[in-house]
Image (cartoon, rainbow, N blue to C red; front, top):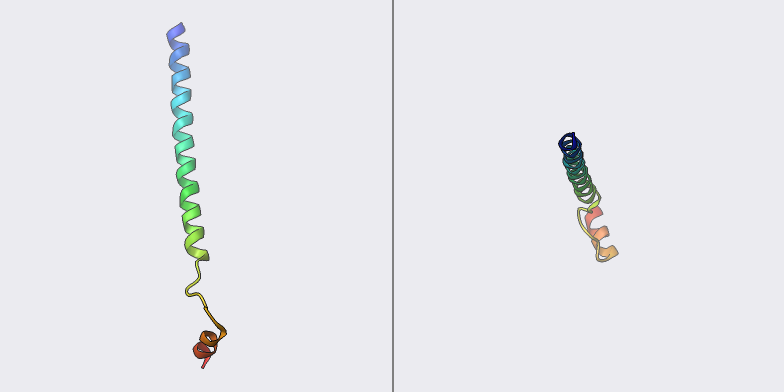
Length: 55
């Protein structure tokens, strides 16, 4: 009877660890996508660059 309880506890621990790793991987993927999406294509160092681009 005690082995059944231990087996269930171990299964719960393993299940929660797998879930936590899955959530962490999804979060890392979302953060990476957000960083790529918000990165500017170029950085203006002066207004002169902007004027040259618009001409």
